[in-house]
Image (cartoon, rainbow, N blue to C red):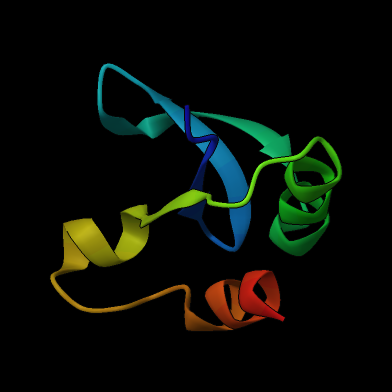
Length: 69
């Protein structure tokens, strides 16, 4: 079981039916969310840069770096 962090605009979101304009924000701080997952015992996190996936190039590098830190 791997928890997931989907990034859109630097926030942790879930998309409704894959629609970028239908995102629910679950956390404003991806690094804090990753820390919560780690505190729960998860050693791995699935991270998706949604902006990057739709644009075809990385878009949330700062959030990914913060998660890794």
